[in-house]
Length: 286
Length: 286
Image (cartoon, rainbow over all chains, first blue to last red; front, side, top):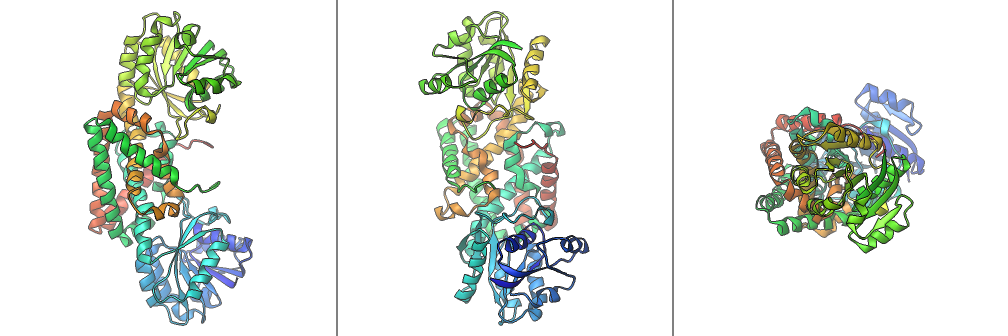
C-alpha cells in the first residue's frame, strides 16, 4: 500500500499503528521520529520499527505516508517544520482528537505538492507510551477522516483504505462536524470523569479502597495525561462548552426529580439513559 | 459454616452468592425463593440450588442464614413477612445498596430471637439475572457490614467471616456512614452516567456507532435496571443530593476554567482527577 510509513511521536497510537501496518503488510518500511532520546532508544529495539530518526526532516524525507501522533497543540508546528522536507505526492495525516484548527492550519502549513487529510481513530486509552503498543488497537474502532472542501477524492480514498486495512470503521465528516460529535462522545465524558475524580479526591481518603467496578469503569479515562487533555479541551473549547451546557440541563432535571421525590420523572431519565446505552455498538473483545 | 443458606431473590447477586457458597463449602444446603415462577423454574435446574420455594415462609423456616437480594424498596416488607417463620438464632442480612432505612426498619420488623445485620457487597453489574451467576463475583470486592449500636459482636463476626470466605474485603461502618460513602462512590457516578446517556440520546442518532471504548466504559453502569436504581436513588436521596452538589461545584470550576481559557487551572483539575484515579485499588481480573 505504501513504500514507507513514518510516524511522528511513537506513543501508544503511533507505535500500535506501525505494529499493525507491519503485521498486515501495508508498507515496505516503517520509520519513527521522537523528540525524546528515551523514546528513540526504545524504538531501536522494536521489530515494527525499521529506522529511528533524531531529525524530523530526515524522518519524513522518503515517506509516502506521514502520520503525526503528537499532542494536538504540537501538530501544526510540526507540519510547518516538515513541509519543505516532504516528497512530492506524500500523504500526511494526524490522529489528533480535535480537527477544525488542525485541518485548516495544517493544510496551510504544507506545500501544495503533498496531500493533507485529518484523521481521528477512536482508539486511545488511559495508557500511554509504546510499551502498550498493540497491533489490534484499531480493530473494530470508529475512525474519522475529515477532508476539507478542496481535498482530492483520491487522497480521501487512500487514507480511508489505510484505516480500513487496520480494522477501523471509517466515517467521513467535515472537521467541524467531527469536533461537535467528539465533544459529546469523548471530551464531555472525559471532563465529567475528571471532575468526578477531582471531587472525590476532596473527600475522606479512607473511602479509596471501597469503590466497586462501576466506579473504576466510570472514571477510567480520568487517568489520562492531564497536559494532553488540557490541550484537547482548549482546542475544542466551544463545542465542549456547548455539550457541557446540554448535559447540565439533563443533570438539573435529574436533580429536581430526585429532590422532589418524583419517582416517575426520575425513572424516565434513567430509562432514557439505559435505552441509549444498550444501543451503543459492542466493541468485541476490546 | 451454616447448615442452610436461603436466598430471597436469586438474581445476579443472590445466585452468585449460592454458587460461591457451594463452591467454597460454606453450607450443607442451599435454598432459594422467588416471587416469579420463571425464576423459580430456572433455579430448579441449577447445581448450586438444592431447593426452590414458592412460599417465602417455608423457604426460610430451616435457614441459619437468610440473605435478602431483592430491590431495596422490597426488603423491609419481605422481612416483616418472614419474621414469624424464622428459626431461633437465624442470621438475616440483605445486599441492598442503601442501608440506613433498611437496617433501622429491618431490625424492627424481625423478632428478637433472630439477628439482623445489613450488608452491601460492591459487586453488582449492569447485567441482571441468574444466567450471569458467577462464583467469583465477590472475589476482591469491598463489602460493607453495617451493624446497629445494639448488634451483638458475635453476629457481626459470623457475617464478616461469611463475606470474607466469599473473597470480600469487609469494612464495618454504621448504616449512615455507608450511605454517605456509597452515595459518592456508586450512586453519584451512576446518576452522572445516566444523565450523560439521557442527554446523548437527544442528539443525532447517527452518532451512535462513533463512540470509542472511553464512552462505553464511562457509561456502562447506565445500562442498569431503571426501576431498581430509581428505588436506590429515592432511598438514599439526601446523601445523593449532597454528593451531586459537591460534584457540581467541581464541574462549575472546570467549566469556568475552560470558558476563560485558564490552562493552568484546567490542568490542575485534570491532575487532581488523575491522581485520584490512579490510586483506586485494582480489582484483579474482574
